Image (cartoon, rainbow, N blue to C red; front, side, top):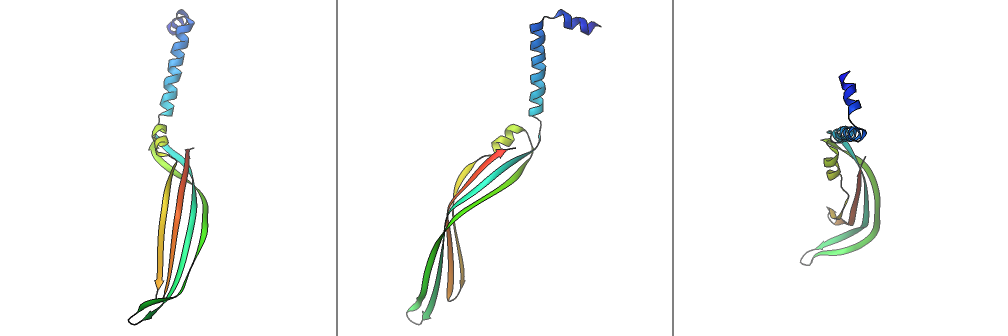
Length: 133
């Protein structure tokens, strides 16, 4: 019975402040809890790929003489979506690790079986757009 008397004797503004403080503390405790968080990302890859094929013939004294040397350029446009799990973190840490960014790429692959050589060079930009679920 004493606790009811306590609530009656305090005025309504103090009661509202007390109630607001309790609700705010409970919501902060809920938000800051550590758990696995999911970061959803979309990778957009744009650029060009240049493929060069060369066929050479080896001549003594002169060295390698190209017989066929051709190349062609193709545009690259790929979109990929994926989820990554950030384990046992609070929401603030998860937001700091779920970032969007851009990075250039420059990849060269050489496949050779003499007298044929195939060179592929990809140049462009990867754009990662991520958001916390």
